[in-house]
Image (cartoon, rainbow, N blue to C red; front, side):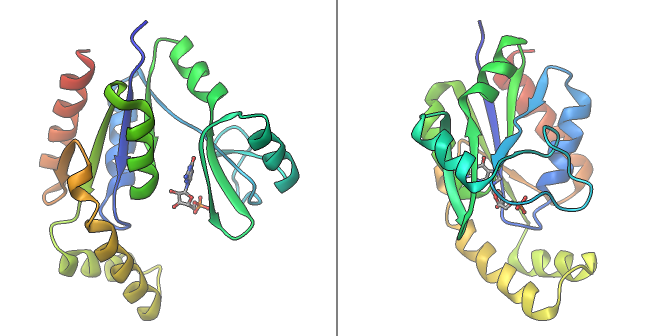
Length: 188
Ligand code: 5GP
């Protein structure tokens, strides 16, 4: 069977979620990998949709059982990871796995999956543009925006470790390019 994974990573505000949402709608054979987490559900989040939710104890138990492809303690006490069973579930359907993950997670997954994986770095046109987008989104305080911009500057340094760079300048062009990337890699 053709077991493939596509990894999308980006500094926050680069427009990654828009790209990933578009690809999932366009290609029925792509399936989003649902991560496991030990954090509590937020808002309308449902188990098995946004995440598989576990207690910290259950999560540690799964780590001990070697149930994860990869996991990280992203915030103190909050674990996140990809279950081996999730990967097998999606491949068993003949689908290609789509990961939407932070840049460090993306680099780790590429290392784990090797030639089975294509890692794509979604890049904002510039740090200034990124700041403008975060301001425009209106969801963060000025301090929070500066923090995110500083983090993005750090994250931009990971760009050379990715297979493909997708610069998100004009959205329509970006989405068309993303389609080409998926078609080329999957041959579907
Ligand atoms: P949130 O709690 O806001 O949903 O996610 C927090 C962070 O966890 C994000 O940076 C996200 O990329 C990261 N994350 C989500 N799923 C996974 C995963 O399976 N593995 C790792 N290492 N990080 C993840």
